[in-house]
Length: 324
Ligand code: ASP
Image (cartoon, rainbow, N blue to C red; front, side):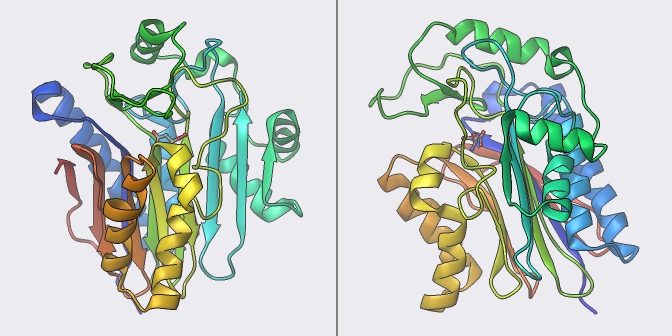
């Protein structure tokens, strides 16, 4: 029997000590610890890695502090379009949804796609109709609103670029070669994800996001794409990423870690560090990821100032962190 492990992230970006109040900091630590604790209880009770990552991401989606589900960012048209993905390391089974606008918990829709469709990725209205047929809860557009995200969007609305939700200092697209002055110094939140190893030695990963603030309608990032923002295979690792999605897509970042382990014999740590600190920066990729292998090795690298992150092993107290 393995000691179960769960790790989660809530986005990476320009998260500095001076930009977070002590109260906000405490709120993030508490939310991260609660969610890890809930997933640990599930795993310690014999639950599967797949159920643990789904439940952790569902809780992160419900938490307004993070850019997924309730609290998601706004598109350039002032709406919300959500992406999510889940993958099982046992058999590479996967499910994902993208550009959905009325599903309360996109990760549950991704699970439904995985178990009850013949497909891996459903988008837009087709995904919404399928989720509804499967009994996944829907909500009106107001459900996703938070004042913080709305203000953030009002500040950048009408500009050509997009803004990494939790990273005010940087525009995600290379149209703007130089980094912009911070537009949103107050609110730094992000995409969410989880990786888990269960008692039986199985891995799973899940990722969910509202994407990037002021994104073009119809834009899909790395989060719902297998191999880019999410990947799990028992023979290598479970990975969930956060950051400038286009760079993670172009480098196939999550799968690149698995490939380095499988083909080059890298350890989890070596592979993840090469991707985050060497490969991604070549294409302007900023962000981080959480990665876990079947031996319980865990690494949480990021190339930004901070990444909301936490993990728990067995019944040890959750460990939470924000800054480098
Ligand atoms: N990777 C996400 C996306 O590009 C954004 C994020 O991680 O905050 O949609």
